[in-house]
Image 1 (tube, helix red, strand yellow):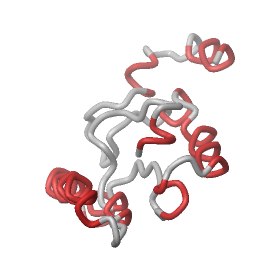
Image 2 (cartoon, one colour):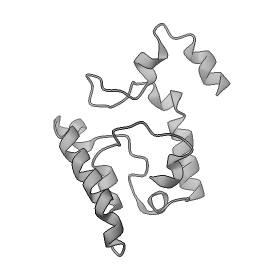
Image 3 (cartoon, one colour):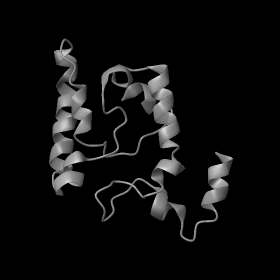
Length: 121
């Protein structure tokens, strides 16, 4: 959006340093202004309102961006991500039992892309 671009030009550091999805020394996988840069909350609420995917209707962790184990006890970033990816991979074989709760384990390793991910996550 034009407003965000204008505001980012006033940051005292490059926006990529504080508003991008990248590895950093915190428990989060993104800079502290990533949610502003990506319009994360706006897009997530749009996805919930549209109910364009099974996850947006039923998952309590739709478009999760938090790593619960990393925030709570400081470990597990990659192990829980592996479990989430594995269960999401086998999920089509268990269509009678939705396993959408695994999205609570860890956020994706790559940044969400909006509006595409509203319907594919």
